[in-house]
Image (cartoon, rainbow, N blue to C red):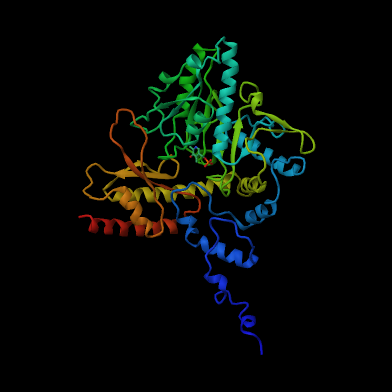
Length: 461
Ligand SMILES: *Cc1c(COP(=O)(O)O)cnc(C)c1O
């Protein structure tokens, strides 16, 4: 006769482990069976595995199986170790060159051996590097122009940016002791105010950031107009010209593939650097961004940002802030670029646009909402709205956020940053339409939105 615990050995639900709580505060003395560890960790994550219902994030939640496999194979590589993984390093350079060309660099020039950019962990690292490029090159210019850059009382460097900046710019300014000069949003465009922006500029300005895809609303700064204003300023101040960095975290992988966007990139003379998130519309899983400079010159990409790394075997140049990190995401990015091509990205982004248009029209049709940013027209597919002034409802967008969450959807509500001449707080809700949001998902969401609004009207009347 077999003993009880022998024939029950394979029954997980009958095991003692199934009723034990998982270690939390302290590391356990003894380990556990690998299958068991896998199962229990899956159980911890049960209620967070609905990434495709998360309309708050810009980040990729789906890649093709072929990309998954390529990335899994590359997971154990180290992208910084360019002598151990020279092909990954080469592929990183191909991506940088392709992006440079996509963003308006001279098509006849070759950049793969030129180190005009780098992959990063995300746009945050890209912004940080772009900002540092502005800071160091300003220091060089200012010194030459006879400014005492150590006299922080009179010459503390400053950065000019719209009030609806992404938090990384606040980090940049805090970390490097740069004064942030926030320009309140233009009330009409809810973006960088072209009537006032140049009032914020002086000899200590390291640069102006132009945002191609404002996180809060999905709007974009008028980079072309900004470039004209900056050019006029620079004509008068040839010793201390202003540089523009474009934060294209979301627009960088969208605008090149969709017609209708005004020039925002290296086609504009005073744009020196651009960052984008590979894990947003670049369609790679979270963990990759890019920053590219106009050229490999002291004026654009000062030497302080470049480091020769001798201890990995063979000296290689590195621009990144982070050091070791898997090469998987670089491989995933290259896969997407060559697998989809410009045509593929175009089709995907157009589909996205169609979904965003439908959702915008639906929201408009309720008569209680006012669109702050519609995904229709020549826009990023980001849908942002507020309650209309005359809406006869007693609930708020925060109530809607809670209600729609009961159906599994995440639609954040939050206040907008400072707008010129507007005192009261404006609360908005936002849906980021991503490639993973098919029309089927959108239709399903709209049904639940209808139901949510009905329930809210009943509850608050
Ligand atoms: C998302 C975003 C960032 C930060 O990007 P990560 O890739 O998440 O680090 C910076 N700027 C803007 C405008 C963004 O939308």
